[in-house]
Image (cartoon, rainbow, N blue to C red; front, side):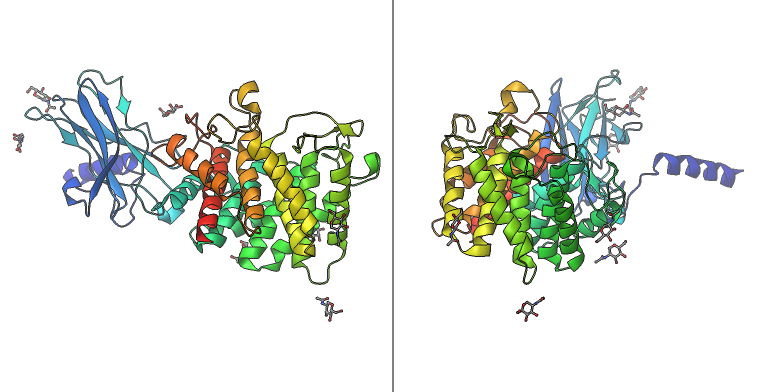
Length: 480
Ligand SMILES: *[C@@H]1O[C@H](CO)[C@@H](O)[C@H](O)[C@H]1NC(C)=O
Ligand SMILES: *[C@@H]1O[C@H](CO)[C@@H](O)[C@H](O)[C@H]1NC(C)=O
Ligand SMILES: *[C@@H]1O[C@H](CO)[C@@H](O)[C@H](O)[C@H]1NC(C)=O
Ligand SMILES: *[C@@H]1O[C@H](CO)[C@@H](O)[C@H](O)[C@H]1NC(C)=O
Ligand SMILES: *[C@@H]1O[C@H](CO)[C@@H](O)[C@H](O)[C@H]1NC(C)=O
Ligand SMILES: *[C@@H]1O[C@H](CO)[C@@H](O)[C@H](O)[C@H]1NC(C)=O
Ligand SMILES: *[C@@H]1O[C@H](CO)[C@@H](O)[C@H](O)[C@H]1NC(C)=O
């Protein structure tokens, strides 16, 4: 009977503690056993109580502490594995009451990450006051410095919190945005040599190369620009791994997209397979992708010819306005005066840099510099601090699902241009953007928001990608 009830107790406990995780140590460890220096990266106060998360970076664990409290106050830990979108809030994990003879209490130690399932975690400490179980106060989310020792690693790790390995894409953002997360993730690996998240490249490729959610195969879909983002990502994957399957896929994507090139308006690629709009982005992407393919495929002539001719058409059709900024697209084969989105000023810079590498023709560099210089002095694309500003900041409160990617795409490509120039004229601007987002647009988990001069609105995998691209560009220039 006794044994039986012990078994029942064990069964109940193991249900409640089914999220018990073991890494260096297992969950529910005595907090006095925490090793190494203890940091308190986040705290909160309520009714004069202080609530802190105490992190042992060495153990990759943390516990919650409440001080200046009263008997019966409860402290517990919330754990998230997707950057704070969801957490185990049915139970007060490690819930501990301040005893009658004290003013403070701490939870046990809990693991932050779960390496056995590739889950990247964050913790916060929460408390409710004696007799007020329905009201709770929590610190912000925070984590250890494991895989987050410097600002770049921390930002990449925060981006990978959203990665869903089972489908190879990022929670909070859509299909094409995922290609941009993948692109900057690969740039990060090329720069740092980190192999930490390398599995995700093959994983994303294999899980998504077949039928995708838009009914296409081989990363193509009815949106030509969406297809081309993946082409650009897989070129980077080839550069990192030298695995031909990535370069072959980039060529398959390019060939599909070139089916939507025709003579309407004298040339150019349509935005979608419905062929209703010729605009800047797919043409800029194709100029870049085809030049990249040329520079990687021995004896290619086809892609170079396409790239050179498409740029000639692009330069002459009038999408580049009097100020040397690129408007969104064409209406009746003329500049439609659409928004000058930052990414439309960006992709062409990387494309022209790649064309210069292909040909040695300095004209491409000079033409790129005109566009880059126009952005840097534009009052429409910079705020009062000289920090990049997206046209949608005023028209749409959160810039919708697409535009949060744009600024990072711009900086990524500005960096690609800057690095082929002897005098590195855009380095100061790139460093300024990186400083601004780090100082003004970041939370304790190294998540970043939309507005590069702050304040942080809310994080997601596109806002994060824009930040990672910017920190990367800054790091690349300073390593030169
Ligand atoms: C404090 O003591 C009271 C009275 O003995 C008891 O009911 C209560 O559970 C105790 N509270 C705590 C937090 O131990
Ligand atoms: C956990 O918190 C989230 C966000 O507040 C809420 O949507 C969800 O319903 C909660 N889950 C439970 C089981 O309380
Ligand atoms: C509170 O009481 C417990 C149990 O009697 C005892 O172990 C502990 O040392 C006491 N703490 C303080 C701060 O007096
Ligand atoms: C990529 O994933 C596929 C399918 O899971 C596997 O067969 C292949 O070995 C992986 N390649 C690498 C380089 O890991
Ligand atoms: C995807 O690309 C490969 C070439 O790499 C081709 O053999 C295959 O037919 C393509 N799939 C579809 C559905 O078009
Ligand atoms: C490229 O062209 C050269 C010279 O014609 C030839 O020797 C070489 O085999 C070619 N390489 C490939 C990969 O076709
Ligand atoms: C260099 O490129 C420009 C187009 O941007 C072209 O007009 C010019 O003829 C090219 N020069 C050479 C030497 O090919």
